[in-house]
Image (cartoon, rainbow, N blue to C red; front, side):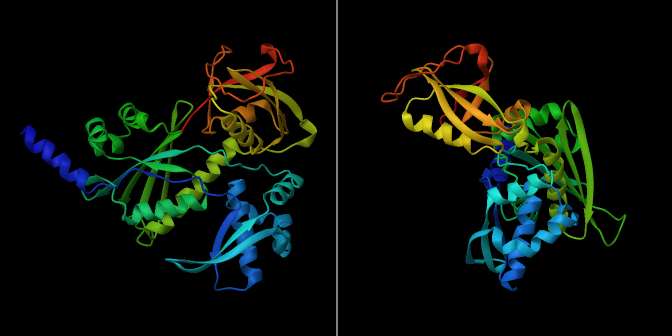
Length: 361
């Protein structure tokens, strides 16, 4: 009996997909059909990016932004023709600073590149049978991956290996047993955990597929249902809704009038290259206009940031910066980086907003 159980698990794993962790999609890049005029694809690229960096599918209903489509060409930095499975396309890179300035001028919050990585547990019910959706060639997974990339949402799919399957069953996921779901999810260290439940429904013959999405927020479970005619439409509808929800949590209203200076301490770096890497990553944060090293020792470096947002919004963005992790102490982190000059430009420990540890990958 035990042998049969393990053989069954082995066969399941044989047909499982491997861990899928999508790279963080570029925010200011769009892929549009090449089967249209240059003016048309420029306008479509600008619309795609505006929806992605605001998290608002309806953003083009705003008259000022609709009018700006006439100037779409001025936002294009570079473009190239590419071939994809969906046909000939144009990959377009747009000017991030100009787009941020446009949105700032109309007091529209912007959602930057620091976004939560999401782990998805997906179960499909067919009649009375429930199964994890795990095969890499599943239409559900390909549709979900494409839809999430359009929204620039980084995601991870489970391994569904023995460790996962001993902790979690399809029934646990379908029933929303979060204790078991959280236990199986811990190894992936994702920022958000989402459950997707897929089934057919007879409610509306024109919309035969139903998706129920569950995720936790501040101790409660958010539940949303979607229906669509096919798998692709269903996942696009869901991803747009999820992007909008998350943007409402994390988008930032840039405000130059609220400019302020603060200090972050980062320990654990062991080379000049690591110090420079952290400095560049901090400078790339939305709402950070300047980064300067103000104190350096063998144990830590203190960076002074000039920001155009609240300190709460900065710390919220830094939750999703993979190279540093917040800790709750001002004790120096051990490490030394030869060749890095010592700087002592004063801030006292009381001036440090938060302390971080460098994460070596």
